[in-house]
Amino acid sequence: MMKIEKELKLLRIAVVASLSLSAVILTTGMKANNDARFETLSVERLNIIEADGTVRMLLTNTARFPTTEQVNGRVLNEERKKRAGMLFFNEEGIEAGGFIYDGSKTADGHSSGLSLTFDKYDGDQVMQLLTVDEKRGDKRVIRSGLAFNDRPEFETQQGTRDIMRELAQITDRAERRKKINEYQQQGLIGGAPRILLGKTAEQNNGLFLFAKDGSPRAMFYVDEHDQVQLQFLNSKGDVTHTWSGADSN
Image (cartoon, rainbow, N blue to C red; front, side):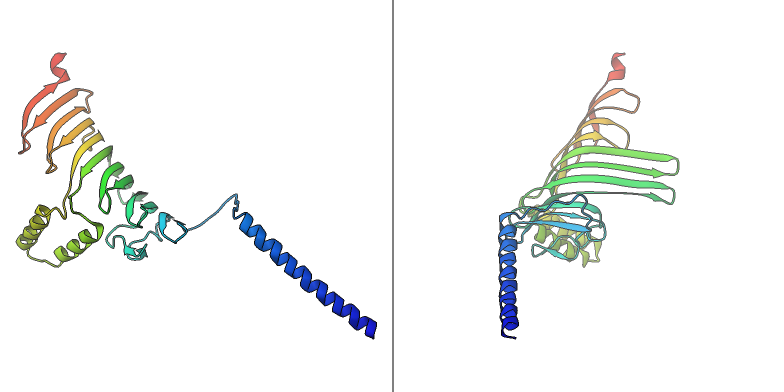
């Protein structure tokens, strides 16, 4: 009996020692190599984070695209349509741009689009790569381009959201327009396109330049009939000077 008890005691000691050694090996192994490799990884959303938990990039399907939920302590945009894609964030956790896309059949055709944008610091997009493909019945329009935009000097993402909520509560159109003008003059909201390089809905391919208020001022393009066109416009939108490649034929 004594011999059996002694053997059981030695066995228990050996088991405990073995488990302890295994734990040490597993722990040191995990610390030495944190890499993991997968042939296929299927997720609905993936957050790329810093060591402190700050989200720096977010890849998501449509359903988990953040609108009302907070990311880095901020609600991004309650009114934004959910789309699959990714969002970028700077070191402070502020949204800095993103890549979104969609496409589906409609009752009389289809609608699809793709947008890659880069924002100014704590503001909206200053550069955008965009394409839109819409088909309605027998008519199909494809437009695409690279655009550069001006943004208000004192614009902030949270400030814009607060102003938009305020404006939404104003039912009188004249009063709302007055408020919009006030905020634009203060450099808090607004912005305008300045340069577009690409194809318009009218199928003109070229370079389009805009004034600070967003009005077109110069266009150099090849039209749908493969004719080269150069136009200059005033602040009212009237063409003041023009040159056409057709004139030299």
